[in-house]
Length: 137
Image 1 (cartoon, rainbow, N blue to C red):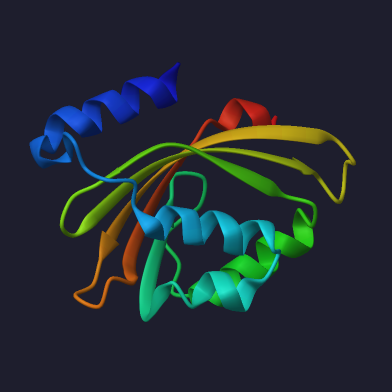
Image 2 (tube, rainbow, N blue to C red):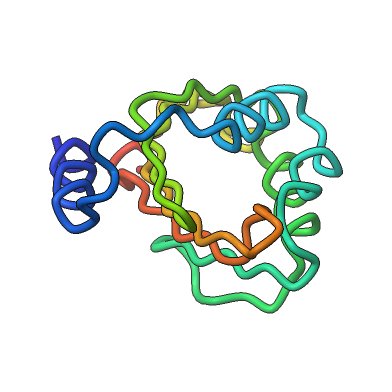
């Protein structure tokens, strides 16, 4: 419910999204994530990219290292791309990810919305992730 409202609000805030084609970047992110390949995933980001998540404080750790750490804690994560839209330099994506917590062995289904700000070369220079944290409890 929260993620649908956030996607709707983002679409209203960025009028040029209407009629935008499916962004190839979102499909590449989905494929890289589901390949469980941190290098493939990190290649879609600029070397100095920043990833801000509402579940963690801002980090200066490179994206590849963040992804490697996440994949160690949640090694079986698979993500399905849902609604997504793009403007000239932004991509908005809705995700449903399933995983098994390596510590608790609990199955989790996590709903996420990501907002990616793109560099001129089309790579992600800034990512904002908004997770439905209720699934993490």
